[in-house]
Length: 220
Ligand SMILES: [Ca+2]
Ligand SMILES: [Ca+2]
View (cartoon, helix red, strand yellow):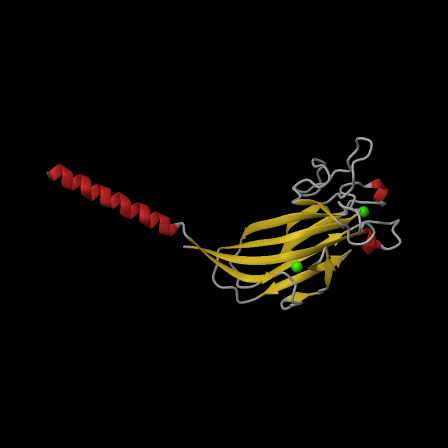
C-alpha cells in the first residue's frame, strides 16, 4: 500500500513537471506589422512606391533602390519573425560577372543596419546546357545554385519587358527568425543591380514585395 502511495506521488510529480516544462516552452506571438498593400497603407514605410503586378498590389517595383520599414513600441520580445513574398522580375543575371556588364545582381535585407540576407538571384533560362548560377538560398558569393533555386512559383509573368512571358517573374517566400530585443526595428531591403547595356534599367531587372509581416515572439 505504501509503495502504491509513493508511486502515485511520483507519477503526479512527473505530470506536474511535464506541464511546467510545456509552459516554459510556450511562445507568446504577436503580429506587430502586416501589410498586403491592397489599401495603399504606407504607415511606417519610407521611400515607398506601390504598383500593380499580376492583379495584386505590391510594394515596388525597385531597381537600384529599396525601402525601409521602421517600427517602434514593439512589446517585450526575444525574437522577431520577418516574412514576405519577394518577386524577382525580368532578366536578373545571378552571379554572372561578365566583366561587370551584366552582374552580379545582388539583393540585400538588413535589420537595424546588419545584413541578414546578401545574395544574388538569376532569372535566366538555361541555354545550351549552361545555367547562369545564383547564390540564393545561400549568401553571395557562391556558385552552388541553379537559376530559381528555392522558388515557390516559377510561371509568373514579367513586370515589364517580359510581361506576357510565363517565367518572367519568380516568387520566393522569405522567412527569417532572428534574436531581437529592442523596442524598435528597422527593416531595409535594397538591390545592387548591374545592367550596363539596358536602355530602361527598371524594365530590364526589378523586384517587389507583398504580404510583409513582422511577428514579435516572447519566450516564457
Ligand atoms: Ca498585395
Ligand atoms: Ca544584371
